[in-house]
Image 1 (cartoon, protein in one colour):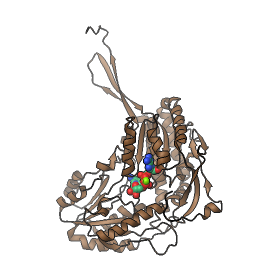
Image 2 (tube, rainbow, N blue to C red):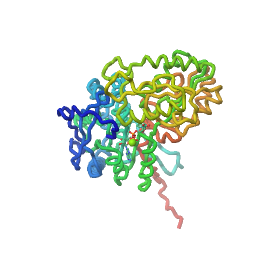
Image 3 (cartoon, rainbow, N blue to C red):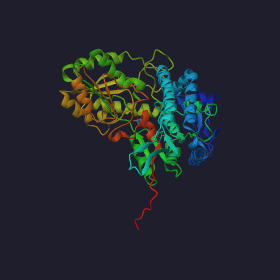
Image 4 (cartoon, rainbow, N blue to C red):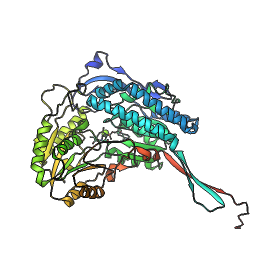
Length: 500
Ligand code: NAI
Ligand code: MG
């Protein structure tokens, strides 16, 4: 929506743009305000769809529907039934894999193979929580013999969920699946750049047995639709993934109502290479860590820390390999990197490229590829000899930009790695199990990989330390965010209490 370059609007003018609608109370509807916004294909810069620009009254309508659905039956639906709904949704995603993957690539720009992988992960996420729904147990507590006590787990109620544009359908799944497994109802606001895949999937909600109002999708931008969702009094919990700036604002806005909040705010994750690592694999891992999904990854290994004895060789090898990465339309399977999601994001990254030229030495990339006359592309870029205090080593760029920083020994590697406000992810590469594990324990990050970077499993917890936010998604941790705990004490002693 915020595009500094004037985007081409051919598709809209020739009437090819699909008119999507929001999904509220089991129906596809227009926004109350009647306004719409344009949705782009970042490779062609054309408008491919329009969506209703949702506002406070649309949020209110959706929250009321979610509230009715929660108290009207979803809260008391059996865990078995909730689980089956999630499993049926997973089946639909698997059946529609290529269609949804193509739409995801058209709307987000990412390479088609990555979209297909995302669809598999999305389905797996619904399957995991479909299975978990029936394993949400309370606990019996060890109180004295004349009583029984236990802890019940109950859904928090209506959950408001705000997601970003880098993994559109997968982010929706990470939020919706655990909420439904817990018995919550949902109002989800997709990113304004990428609302299409979840609206497509919503066409299957009724078929898989989701009662009206249990999941509502309100499209719109942050201030228009996101902000009123955060402050709506009937929303009990907000789950957010996005920028740290908006995360802070959400936390402030949720404070008055003491609304539960979980935040995943990205980072500046270190990818640490000791000289005893498998060299070829390490170079690949450094590139994959920050160039996958065009670098639009919250856990991107954007700070590459390399031990001095392999430093020069590493930078040269990484630069040589980065030159071979094919950048172009995500729909062409030869391309390993697509365009960035929007003109605004491209411009933001290009501004950082200018900063980087001042702060570091350029090994490769550093601009927009010349061969494309359209599309919001950025070259895979490597800066080296970067000081960890530099802006390109401290600020999240969210694009294909690697900052390489040398280090002397293990202690210095750990010190540099932790010297950031963020703490989402980190990776360490070494063949020395003692050293690797010492570093794992010393790193202040919610996710640490050894000899790889980015593999993500629905079974494993996802979330950050420090300014990367709090709360954990995925695994059994993910469902905790949507549960309250009720202590129940039952007195079995029939004698009078006799205190007064
Ligand atoms: P953003 O944080 O503004 O947007 C993320 C979501 O929050 C979108 O759905 C947006 O509509 C919503 N939002 C925005 N303002 C809001 C408000 N006041 N109240 C409620 N919801 C609001 O991120 P943006 O502007 O798209 O990207 C800027 C930077 O944020 C990126 O360059 C990147 O550094 C970071 N980011 C991090 C992500 C992550 O995965 N942690 C994902 C997307 C962006
Ligand atoms: Mg923003």
